[in-house]
Length: 491
Image (cartoon, rainbow, N blue to C red):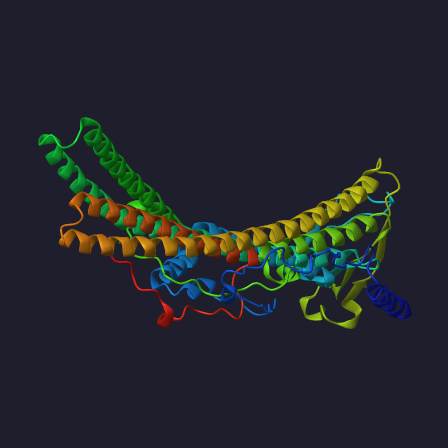
């Protein structure tokens, strides 16, 4: 009993020791104090962020105020096969972590045997003068067996630490899959809506060019226009028609992509024409250091680093003996079932096994160096993921800044062309301008509107890129103000 008590104290003391190997600490990464450029053309577009990693991510796509986009994203999150595979891998990682955590507790099994045997009367004996007799007897033996690896170095705790970090990495990877999926879907949706706007405007341009071609043909038949002018207008009309067909083809590609992202066969999916939202939501940006709290890919890289750090301790523990409490069992053994639990029938055993590798050809040392190198790999990957996060955010901010300025200038160009068209319409009614002059001005007006929609679509695509670069949703999104929505363009 004293030896059992001493052994128990030894086990508790060993488990309480600090685990072998280095304790994990997140490495310090140098962040710039602020972003290189901050938008000045539209300062109301930007807000200070207050991220919180323990707050559930919001549905960032709802900030655009588009019900069709909301429905597509919700369908995608429910039906997308890539996301379902990622969720299944997360379940696997959690199950593995739970299974590895069970190693901290002993394994207890219960068994029982029952047999009736008969010995041979002709069995060999130790004395020729002794006559053997045949014997028939029963043997009943229920036992409870316990095995336990004493974690005296903290090897098992390091393994549990690694498995938990791996499960957390899988959770961050799943969040990243969701972010990439929703960002790709929103990008494809806004590109499709941009094509809708361009198709609408280009259809008007083609109609005007057909009208111009008819006017030039009449003038050509009357001898008032040359062959060159007719050929040029014919080629321009045909070119615009080809652009219109190309836009329709590009729209079909995005429509098919949306079908796949939402888990729907492309042949069974269609999206009617629609319009781009006319106003961008406000996006909080914050400081570069907040990317650590936002980006799931950065979080996944950091968790991979923590798991690799724990593996160093696991590899180092192989230099030392392994202590196992096995086999430890208690039970009974009797030839009579009714007396199996009597005191004389009691059987038990407890022991400690120590195993130490004496020669392995350098395998333990190689595994230890491998674990150290694995940590350095994850460290480099982590720092690279941070650098990429800063770059992507800076790129998205710069793109939005330039598009905002370009859109302001293009809006001014559209306004001037609208004014020119109104003046030419008055002059045409007064007989001062020809129908051809009026049609040419209207064609330029619609062309400028098409460029405006290209820039407007680019703004939404860049906004999605910024959301993706910042890591998705967060608190503080501001939806567009419907009272400040621009009126739809009129042809």
